[in-house]
Length: 578
Image (tube, rainbow, N blue to C red):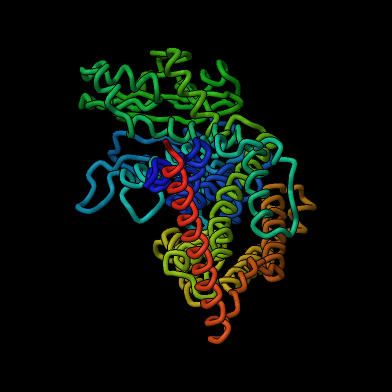
């Protein structure tokens, strides 16, 4: 064997994968493994930018609020009722009504909770009367807000850990996606309609680039909101004593522990006067919350907190009063640079500082982020379906991913609409009514998964999209039948909370109908199968074999003759030597 033959016989080294190929794999799997949870987090987080408006729609008994009530009058009115609702409580807190919220949301600690009972209570009060809202019991849009970072039916701590884990995967997917797409900004202006897999990729790229700064910001700031839980070691190392930890907490939150009561009875000073002082300092409509610790005791404290209005930070800003006398004890207006940075990042994630226009921009860009996750999930199956030997009989992993995609994307819309339907149809006096609204959300979402597993994939997509379309489009009709606030009346009276929400429902229904039609008309393009070479007849094969053998014999004959000729030449040369 020659040196060249030995060199050719060595096994070739596998081709080195480039950084883009590696990042592409990371992007695909980071997005797929938690994509279904991320889709739910994105969509429920998107609607949460209008959670106050959703809550108003889910409480139709409360009249449209044209003017924001005076917090200095509302706080003592509700506090008087709370003394009867929550006797002996060492802490209660009132979230004041504002331009987007027409109720007072109260929270209090229960003095002596019974075994198995939660240690706190909550209720919603009418700011005009101070009484509990007599209408239907509902959790309102707050459910979607809570769900997008702590889910449901599981311990809050574990749920937030899961949300943090998924957000980290999302951040990895965003960074790896930017590295993968070398022409990402060119791709933003490229969309090839009706090209199957190529169209899905173009849509995914356009949606990603359109909101890339927002997607990166909302993911990173989402991690910041949970960083104290996911990375507690830095604060534990820096703040070792209880006093240091309390000082750190005061830089991050307006929460002030109630402390131990003195045992000396003392009536609470007029709340309205303390709220007035805060209004004179910040403005009449700037009161966010009023909290009272140890009401009725000489150690009582009242904290009046600035609301999240037009301020791109949620860093603590409050006034602390002595409860028994109404004396101003402390004004918290500023925090350190690190706490302020966290407050700004937190506020950017919540988006509460913005007006209606900014909130709609948040909503639309976040909706594009939801579509980005959804198109990424769909593209995984579209890309691999073309490579399946039998697309109608895929392997189990492909089948499972496809069914989960259908349930997560088309089924979630049905589940969210089901909660609104339950809000209108469940009996008003039903026990644990708000819990059953949530139950129906999960019942219909789970039923969508079952349906997706029982039906062919394409039919399941189309049927569930049409179901989501009907559920959304008929909600304004259901509202006409169950309340006295139909859409046309809301439009005439300028009630943009009700009319805006129902028009948005109709727009989303139209979007579902368009997707259903497009999915029904879609015909996957399959790669042409390579034609196998026709098998030769035995006689022809024998003839070919004979021809090959004859050629081999001829070659060998030539070689033998050549060797013989060379040998004869060599003999002649030897005989010719002297």
